[in-house]
Image 1: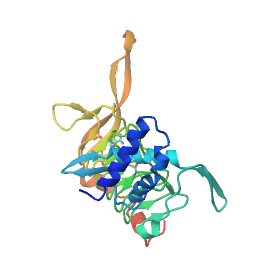
Image 2 (image 1 turned 60 degrees about the horizontal axis):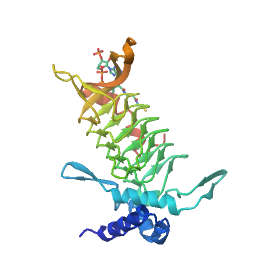
Image 3 (image 1 turned 180 degrees about the vertical axis):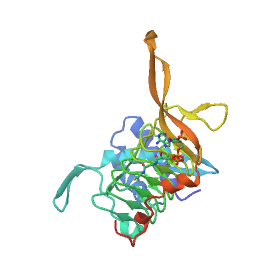
Length: 279
Ligand SMILES: CC(C)(COP(=O)(O)OP(=O)(O)OC[C@H]1O[C@@H](n2cnc3c(N)ncnc32)[C@H](O)[C@@H]1OP(=O)(O)O)[C@@H](O)C(=O)NCCC(=O)NCCS
């Protein structure tokens, strides 16, 4: 019996009632829903956990997040001259978490940031988990439930997709030490292996062919970037439908593995991670 077994049972029971058409169930069980959000917010609970080397999605936690949207009311929030209108409060516990949040970065309650995370003006959504010392650079967005490891660099404008529904869908997972170049987009449950490097502008959806050029046998992977691989954007030529000639569709190429020269290009912002240095 784990700490959250009884909470899980409560949420599953509310979900069964919702599935059976009892719309009031989420309101009636709102204490349990708030307990889940609070446990996410303090890092005691995660949307997905690594168990014996594989990631397991806690779909009941995602269900609880969706219930939270049902039970919260739209409200005005005023921050100095800024006014927002939403249902989900903003995260507040930064000092206690020992993270740096550069204005106007925004994180929603129910995400968790480990110590040493730096949020440049960026966005982290509910259910997301960001590991220690990870840099979320300017205009990077971390979608709902995404699981980001420690010492990751999400460069400027990186888009990490969120996934709430379906509840069993795997979130985007970025393992420890990965580097995502400017404007890289990673969505639909893609899993980026430890210390992998995605070049600027790489786009990975679950359909994107990832062409592995590391051996004489060229192979195509989908949904996963092996650890320490360096991935650059590219195109593949293929026949257009209806005999309409050739087209080039987007793909990604694994051009090799991290070298010392790659590390030099991907460690530009160490100063930003240092709380003592103001940038
Ligand atoms: C991926 C990256 C780190 C380069 O990795 P690398 O291992 O050092 O690769 P190299 O420069 O040794 O290049 C190896 C080959 O891949 C090609 N290549 C490298 N990066 C490429 C890219 N982004 N697009 C297309 N081809 C690329 C090189 O032209 C080279 O081919 P060649 O041998 O025929 O000349 C770099 O392209 C990149 O995207 N850096 C991120 C920049 C960024 O976003 N910074 C964030 C600042 S906030």
